[in-house]
Amino acid sequence: MLLVYMSFTGNVRNFVERTGFSSIELNPANPFIEINEPFLVVVPSYVGYINDDVIDFIDYKQNRNNLIGFVGSGNRNFDEMFCINAKELANKYQKPVIFKFEYNGTEQDIEKFKKEVKSIGISGTKY
Image 1 (spheres, helix red, strand yellow):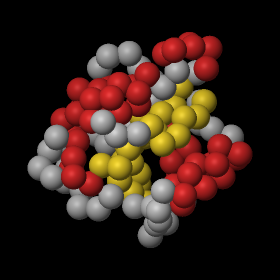
Image 2 (cartoon, rainbow, N blue to C red):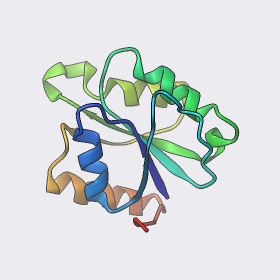
Image 3 (cartoon, rainbow, N blue to C red):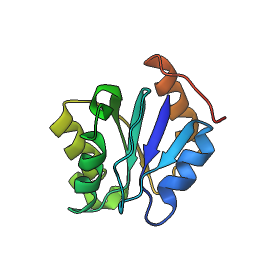
């Protein structure tokens, strides 16, 4: 299992690195990479523009077939906008939002996330 993520401020990158899962940071300048294994997409919350890059990535070659779901990062102070990009992408692709965390997540968030991944039968650690 793989985590494919975007991180503009470093919060998502920090969270992903602390999970111990294999990961690839998606480059908005060239989102056209092919993934040939199950993956989750981890995105921050920014209204608008990041979804286009993530959509380009998911729609590239057979990536959609390996997409399991989404993980969102955000700020709970924004109420319904909390993890908005993960929610919108999940709706578009009819895949679940597996987990939500605030900023770069707490150690408890990391443990909860790992348990959630394990409970849906996804495994894998960083090489």
